[in-house]
Amino acid sequence: MKSYFNEIKKIQYEGPNSTNELAFKYYDAEKVVDGKKMKDHFRFAMSYWHTMTGQGQDPFGSSTMERTYNGLTEMELSEARVEAAFELMSKLGIEYFCFHDLDIAPEGNSLKEKYANLDIIADLIEKKMSETGIKCLWGTTNAFSHPRFMHGAATSPNADVFAFAAAQVKKAMEITKRFGGENYVFWGGREGYETLLNTDMSLELDNLARFLGMARDYAKKIGFTGQLLIEPKPKEPTKHQYDFDAATVISFLRKYNLQDDFKLNIEANHATLAGHTFQHELMVSRINNMLGSIDANQGDMLLGWDTDQFPTNIYDTTLCMYEVLKKGGLKPGGLNFDAKVRRGSFRADDLFIAYIVGMDTFAKGLLVAEKLLKDKALESFIEKRYQSYKEGIGSRIVKGDTDFTELAEYAMTHDHIINSSGRQELLEDIVNRYIYNS
Ligand code: XLS
Ligand code: NI
Ligand code: NI
Image (cartoon, rainbow, N blue to C red; front, side, top):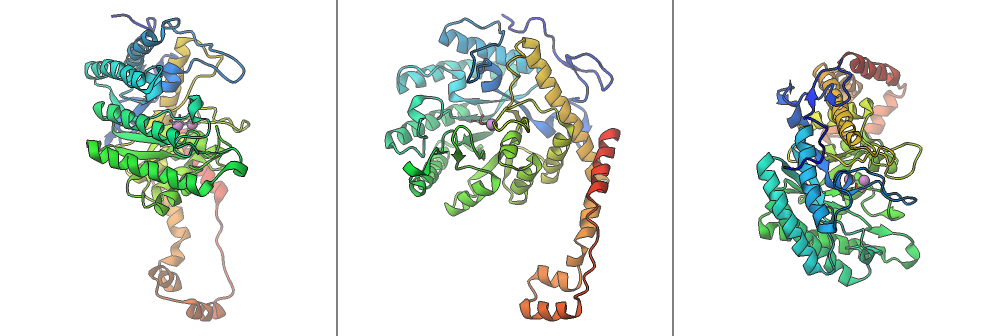
């Protein structure tokens, strides 16, 4: 069989002291942490679009990536990419992939042709899945790249576009079901606006809800039992995306009574674009029982767009895994590397190194988070901090056992308030200490 990454062997775990750039230093797939194998904590996935389809283009320049499958015709290229994708995942020990319909097969000249192309490639993917045991974490639809989606898909003012997007989701969901996909993602794409001067926001939001409701109904109809997910993002490509952040999406879902059918796919770079930390978005989702899955990457704090870099920041991965452990695991979600190598990192081994550093950074984060939680290093402080709600007037507030009249009487005799220190620097020191020592 043809190899697309000839020089690269299966990546092994060599431990923290290894200097081999093509080895894991912390990610030890079979190692048991908190009663579960590392690989089952993460359920790492390869993003098909960044890894296979993206070629280093940016608004100022064309492809840069050196790949052995460059230069083929459209359909040949799609086929070669399937082979290459499964070789890459097998060599990295990544057990899941995520895909858009458009990543795997060419658009064609009509919807009919698009469907036919998808069927050919889906057959091939299915074959590779059964050969390798690699699974599908989620599928999704690209309803944003083609010019027809210039004004949005489900929120387009043009009903024909709404219908086309529906046809696309229908097919992509059928394929995801065929693959045994464990989730299906809706990222807004161009569901937002460029100017309110031409926008009926109320109708657009109602239509988005109608679209999602129909998608849910179709999933039921075909027996697709995967979790449906919405991926919040505040901006890019539109000035304002309706799925702005976790809180916005949760309130949208509740308004349209869709909250029991969808959960959230939280992406690190989208969180920071919304002016939040990754941990904030994860926590908002978790406490609302809406955390479904994660798009792992990181942004550049000096750049205002989705740079989709591989995650290398241990502090962020620690706090991410802290939330994941508090939730009790991600399943059926997982950790999809929605990340790409920089345009200048054009060699094939750069791609492997990027995944290795991402997986290692998460592995280290898991070890730190597990220890923090086991020792209640932060939890016991937080517990004490809210002690006043466990007794006396505080416990009556929590139980709903009091009112403003009684509270005012109470305050009258307790108006010399004594506060405790928030100890932020101490807690930051504790987190650092756990990072040094885990
Ligand atoms: C774009 C999104 C996209 C989704 C899938 O910013 O992150 O890649 O994850 O459509
Ligand atoms: Ni994403
Ligand atoms: Ni993104």
